[in-house]
Length: 413
Picture 1: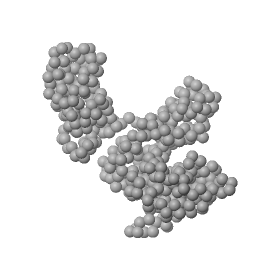
Picture 2: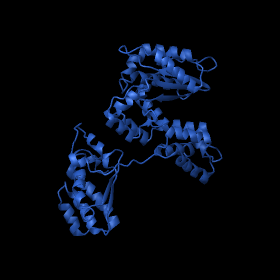
Picture 3: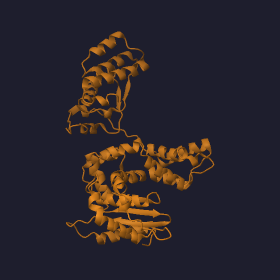
Picture 4: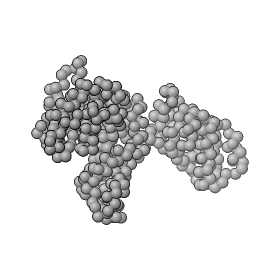
């Protein structure tokens, strides 16, 4: 990991890598001999790691297994050098090279070739064919998540209600970081919940979920960076619109491997991996638009005198906003094709402004975006369709789809 900042400077990067590896080996195998130190120092940059690992194997009575963590932080010639040295040592196993090496990162090794800073695609032959198998750290099952939360209950007496557990599962679908972060927000970072006699119920967990999204911790912030990648955009942008995926199978698998999306069974349609990602993705992509939505651009007369939501006035106000400012707002959208959808969601987010919430349903190829605006006890369903003058009028399909959506929600209008 320390070599990441050195980018394609092979000499400097390999010096850092071999120094760190040698320090770890000395903790396990004991101090290196002076002869070994001199031999490693005199080795050419393109062979130094392989020679270092060979000397470690010669000192060990047992075959070695080596983990290289954060290996996908390397790029360019440094990455190629490391992979080629591993490939060159393969035939010397186990006496003169580690019996097994595990490259740990967020991507499959087959995707490393896509990360050249100048856009060049490296087809480095055997350098990228060194793997025996790709293993993905799986998500928690529902039972494992329940068992984890039960450990908190056993230790403190504070329980999670069944409704809160179900919301936690739907919100995270077992994604390990989210499972832990959501519970931590609920039981440690929310001051009033530090009273362990208070049960974490549906509303308290929902508030923790919203706070977690707004916190935008490192894990969620990294999603923002991933969304800028062309391979990710080719999958996420049409999914937001309900359109067919534009990327190829390698793009789809890459985004699945990142944990951003999943295949819904039995249809195999691509959808966000969990409810938190379904919420974070459009929020991240519409953040700049929300900043540009000053109060004077949002008419406040969408409430009745009693403070309840007036759906008709709400839609009329949005229509007026769209005609006046929609085209300008779309210019700041990071995803051009999905700009209308993002402008709408930015508008909704600013209008409710913490007084309600939006639940979103979207999947690639569905031909629609479903939004449920919840304001107090009121529920307002919105079906978003794309009008394209080169295609048939979407109205008839939209009416059938909104009817099914309303039936699923139990709403009459």
